[in-house]
Image (tube, rainbow, N blue to C red):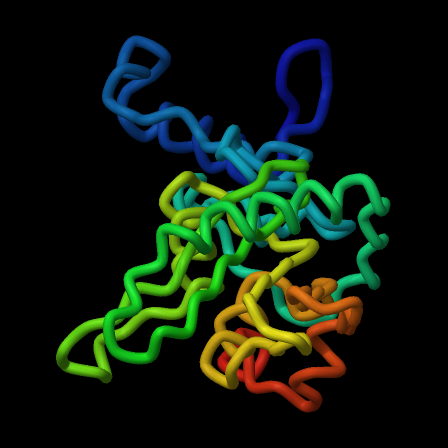
Length: 216
């Protein structure tokens, strides 16, 4: 079939023209919906959609991701750069200061912690004990939960301070929570003595269980 100016009419347009003729001529065009022509890009204006080589629609994996709840790290990211010494010293001072606010009527073991996010913000926390011992929260987790409440999701470093002669590394539960947001974060443990323990979280918690294990 030929259309205007002798151009061939194919596919959906041919069916459309035949339908017009059967319906009684051009005057009945309003009775038929015009044919849908797929967008050459395959997206049809949908946010996050794009066309592949064959015109099929694919969706970018982050197109519909919720801005308020970004996905946590998977543990497969590039190693993080280490904060400079000035930043670590500032974190240690803040950790010592916030540790003075610890609520420790049972253990008398005072801990202060500061986490550093990927955009340079710091969040403090101290340990808070409870008469029901299992409800006690460590300083590290306290600081991390403050970070999360402020909308941050990525830890680059954690500094823990205890009033002890030797450094005390985070407990297993805190290591697991740090792993959720900073699988390769630098963890520094300071004390009243001269020693400082400095390790990556991946060293303190090798072969950790994390978000990547739950991906399907």
